[in-house]
View (cartoon, rainbow, N blue to C red):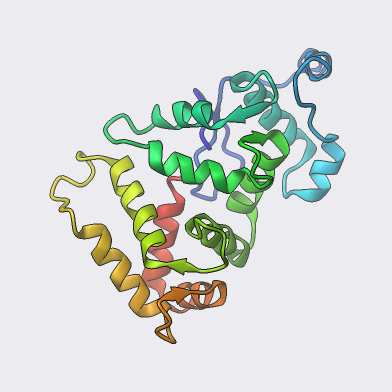
Length: 224
């Protein structure tokens, strides 16, 4: 997820881009946060608990919360707001479809909104998780119907959404069959038993064994 205007470089990992409307966190900010947290629709878990559950420090969580709150004063973000924020960073393409799937991946409770806890848990995995954790998160993004498998239609839908989001200026020679060709190449390497679907283990093993495929997945990760 991308929040506007001030980039917070939490570490050197290339994904995702996290930017906030914010300024250096001060003691007065802490007091303001405590007052506002009593007024919002959703109050997040204690920072100590989130620190234990994520790979962020308490200080980083304070910065993340302040940025999240600036964009989502109610303490939660709905899909339309998420799409609006995301679309601003891809003005030459249509980010709505990809933002829809990304929103669903962050919305772990499937209730149509993302709480701060869900946001930082997903962000922690993408920024600082192990390679397996990142691949598991990516697998669940592609597994649109949550049946534990990725089929060709699901992967094609995500890949096409990424191409649509990047827009014509990024891919001036893009033809309609490019996403399908991309998916066909992936399935040839991933679907070892030719079952027509890819399991989590097949997905992880294929990515770990094929450097080019891993780079492709990391490229897609850059738009998360």
